[in-house]
Length: 462
Image 1 (tube, one colour):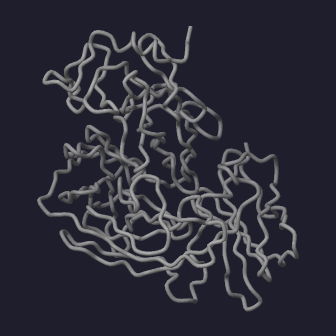
Image 2: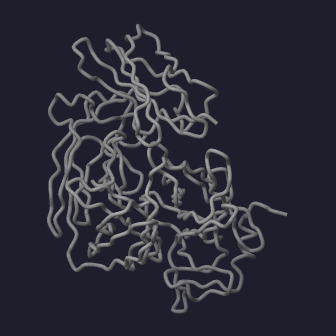
């Protein structure tokens, strides 16, 4: 029978294979020094020891009909989007199991915060992707099953959305040289031309990656990881083929990006964060893209107030700088007619420091429903509701699908002292598709004042 694992149970699971910080300590990188069936993990108070492995179990399925997807890749990521596992491949039923590296306390309880999942598959949109965000998975309370600590919850299963017809069918895969002090790499295959489009995968702790859904054509394959640079490689694919491209480390030093920000009229917002997004992956309509592991200021999950920020160890390349992208009750100032509100772009050269242009952040319009606390299921056409902006004259409501396509755009009068409620009146919503509503407030001079947060207002019709 399954049971929650406590200190007494862990004492049995650690067993005779346990090592400590002495000369015969096990190695968590090479995974040596433990008995079969155990893994070497770091211990909170220092040293290493052997414990029962922590594994995530789940299913990857088609969001439209719940059928399992075979051959999907799944990787667990930490708070800095660095892999906390190797990549798993789903079986014929869409099931997977991945072992997650976690620091332990002296009783073997997993530490180190939540993880999230990334899933990719041929013919499907990457998760997280578009407007969809990954939910945190708590690994601190696993269930012991036959000497393995299992985490299996609704959030360990992932529904994917099929790509529109005409999507590419080629794949690029390979191995990436991962530094000993790093745990993963963002790999980007960029199309040729003046405005390249980037297709991505996360190389796991062993450096394995696979990029799906590439169109026919020529690509530059690039690696992005904090603290290092990679030698770019090229590849050509066509006709649904797959091509191997391996990436090696460059001797070039990484760069540094610094910047400053003004937080004006913050409302309930107390602080925010800044991330670098690889420019070729940036979606203009959704104002989001792929961030290499670790390229966030401040590190981890902390927030900062107005002032300067710095991201060190930035690989050479072109980036968009995003601020207030998390649910922190702040947004980038939407009034692009004013100074310091445009989305910032920076070019990073190996070994050099670059200063990003400053920009402004302001308090957000808070979403009431749907999607105030994450993606929310709706029954039929939703009614959109948000906290009233007392200085507004009118609101613009926009609804996007998960691919960033605008499907409804409406102007409604401002509300007088009450929170607005506006029924959706656009095209028929598709079952299994995810959507996001966004609201921008305007004053009597048609100047935008504020808007809803980047990650809120997401809903789906089941």
